[in-house]
Length: 401
Image 1 (tube, rainbow, N blue to C red):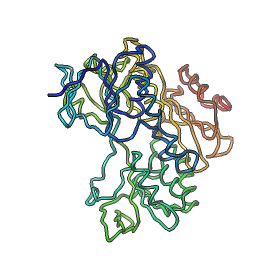
Image 2: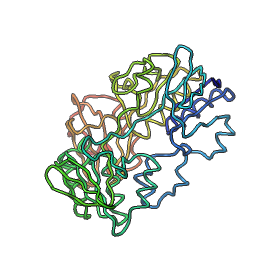
Image 3: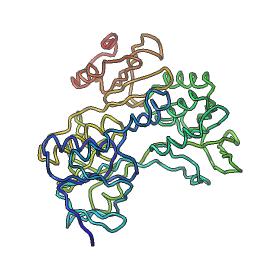
Image 4: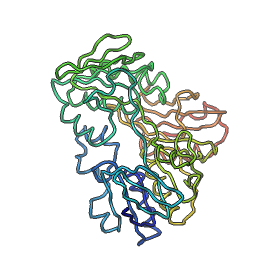
């Protein structure tokens, strides 16, 4: 059986995997690295798929993290359009679907997450788009435009972003989701309800507190039947109901898992020669030590890089706070720390539900901050959270302007 040997192997050619290359090469310029990806594309930046590619601020060629020559010049072997089927920890090997073996000294699992599927009749119909990958963008962008219609299932990050993007590109949009309002996991009710009103004012039909019960296809049209609203006929059905961490390889290899692949504060799994980073990593939160998992761009960059450094024997602790951002029509925000709509929140508005700062609190301490159309203040927000001091809510007014 064919076999190749590497010092470092990275499974997952997304943002975390590509960032690990930078971490490795900062401390080890020469040893062999293999980067394995399931997609046929070079590693690319995922946020533009529901943001700047639709607004015209970026083109597809702009989203690739590096040109192919970067990998060649950095001594990185690329293995794209390839599925790894097994990790053999005893012999420190991985195997792909063709039976080829690759030997490693250090292994990174940067496998990210896979879109959650609809558990309804017709959920696996050809053409239903579980939106996450560049191929999805290319196909939906081809279909979208004036005179076309889409049902978007899901009211979280992806659902709300792709609905806005489609509407801005002259597509008729209907949203279906079971929650009371858009982005209910992170927005306080007053902001979520205000945002939902903006969507309806833009001409998006919002079927909140509703859910699909079946999908069907008639000729070239989709028919979505919902619990409360009957049938919706559309050209496209796009599903954005979150992702599940891709942990199958780790589980089969006997690594410790939970809501992701369990790692320590250096991003090592229960096998010290195997690391995990990005959407699939279940890691100790720096301010509490409790395990958490984060599905955001910034976390993938920072964990990927640190995992690469630690694979190269740097032995550094992960201390970064969560950070994410989103753009919904003219409303943009950045968020730092723990952002959870279930937490008590104090809003310091300059313009109500449009511009200001929301503080998420627990035990009279600021745990998270959302900066709504307030820019270049994320570092200050991090400092406020890291202080972890008791504070009266009224003292937060004007704290970040």
